[in-house]
Length: 247
Ligand code: NAD
Image (cartoon, rainbow, N blue to C red; front, side):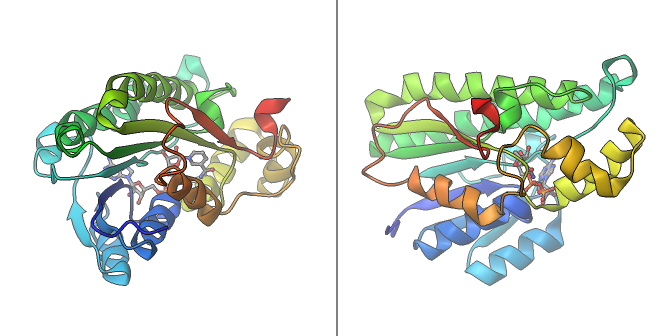
């Protein structure tokens, strides 16, 4: 696939799935803006792919206002996890997760859709999760945020269709990234079990395929959604979860 002449913006592009998306889009010849609050990571990825780094905390709406508007492919990817029972969940942590994982994607859509509409072409790819479709214990803020992102994506799909803009979610199961490595430690504490048993007994318990997903496998789906032959795929949620949501 050739994305020459297209400009992409990937949030959380400094690590994990975002980095894999930035690499895949650049390999398809898109110009890539790598947005991350971790400046070193953003610079490293941008340097590797010949893209441009933007050091921005997506929890700050004023910082989002500094990002480019001329974007053809928006990948809303940045996110993080907090594991705690509902009764103990810190309210400020809950609010921050909605801010970064729902409000920031909304603000970025608001900012970049006019350019896509004017060009008659655009792709919005929201990195949701199997937790955009299913719940798990101890993940109230994350499950709420991902379900909200699903709704936002569908509205963008309905509004954007007449302008040649599609919006879709990708719904991965557990991916081998720093986010999951941290979660294995947190889940061990929350469930009171050994970190070594978390992978088999907690994370992969509901996945028929008993392995972690690789970030490049998620990026391949994001890239597929940028193709011309997938321009009729709109408002969809594409599970890449080893069959978890089929069960
Ligand atoms: P990661 O921790 O490897 O990378 C996330 C990146 O986002 C980091 O570089 C981080 O600095 C950046 N980021 C976080 N908060 C930010 C903020 N406020 N402003 C700017 N940048 C910020 O995580 P990952 O596993 O690659 O996850 C990426 C996305 O994929 C998340 O939305 C996550 O919910 C989703 N996801 C991950 C998995 C998984 O198993 N890893 C599964 C399903 C969905």
